[in-house]
Length: 623
Image (cartoon, rainbow, N blue to C red; front, side, top):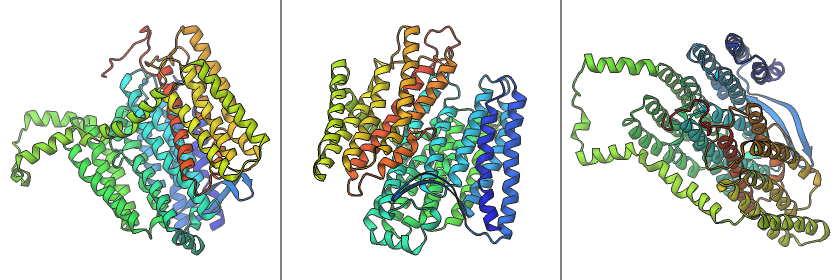
């Protein structure tokens, strides 16, 4: 029975994926076909989940693990897709299937005659596939695959009203925070490879052998755990990343309910529960998570109470509850945390779906049944202290300002100081790359020299991607600088140690093809439009919808999205960065993260936002 259940786990992945592919076929005016197809697939998923859980319970609630297939394998390295099922997966499975089916029914009527009706249901199914891939993941590689799908579907749903300025702008902000979380997952994968000397599955982390390694290398385990906490905090909007959640509410109410009220926002808590065996013996990490949770709960509660938007108020209330959930997980109360997650998810979904009606009822009640505020304990608090917290709440405790001052502005300042604007400097960097390749092939260098050169080459790649991120005048130059970063990374890691060129071919295969196609697409648009820069949003998705979709695929391929071998290649090159080379690993991971931000920025400013010619209907900038 256990073997059969392990085999049937893959159904929960294939059904949403097949439904997503089929949903692309109907035309955008076939609303009934699109909505009924989506609802049927999600309802079938829910039905199978209930039957699966009943059979799983009869079989004794045993943990299930199933290795589906090995994508790439060499000596000492294996990239494989692994599925895992336990009580945590069971909770998230029922919660996700039920809420998605509920939101699907709601959206059929809420979005009726909306121009992006089909696009919404397409993206919803893509999200549902990524969500199931995360909760059923049996190792970090599979989890990261689903994590990437969640990230891009979040961006597309927040920017659903893509002809408006604010939704697209806020979608970029949210995606940038998600990419910070990616750093944590990537570095956690890298350290786990070196600590365990193999790609391990979650089911093995509680084994005596791996627990011995975790206790033996406690300092490495602490660093690994910190990376995981950063990823969890970014995904669940904990401090200092809390400001992205209300900005994610720019999307339609159904997407707000299912993404940021119930499912996606709890993925950080899911990661902490799933990786509990790694950090459960580390008191410092437990204290860190508790401090993070308590501080977030306090700050988010204060902000929620002064919000003028009901959706923002619900968002910050959810963040405060997740802060408490973080504390419960740190204290080892995982079962209580799962109950709390389910309760919070159902409550926030209900509140968000009914928020438009509730606002109307409250407005009427305020006018016709006014009751003066009753005295409570708050009346005894000093007015000076009360007003101080009020001002801090309205300013969101300057969280957004903190991120801009200490993260984004320094990055932009560095990018503006890099003189990679002229053609001559681009030629020089190309010549340096050729010289480095010749040096690698024709010279036998010592190990220390190789490590130094690899750091220098990695820094050149990081400089290139900083320049691409801040480029304003030339879209094509920004695109080429972003793509060139991958070549510098490949050369840097090749210098780091002797390994087969086959790994570089796997890594760069998707980049080279996508780079060429993307350049041709942008160049063709530039010739037709006469100009193409990154100073404004052009909204060219109106006029070039097919090219916009093709360029999005190219951008995803270059960023390492799991549609090309580059995704495996990124994990593969990190396996060749040594455990003591944390500097090189940080340089490479940061360059790949900013690489993704620059690519999405190019796509958003070229194809999204208000149409620059004004020959299409244009929303007000503040709408």
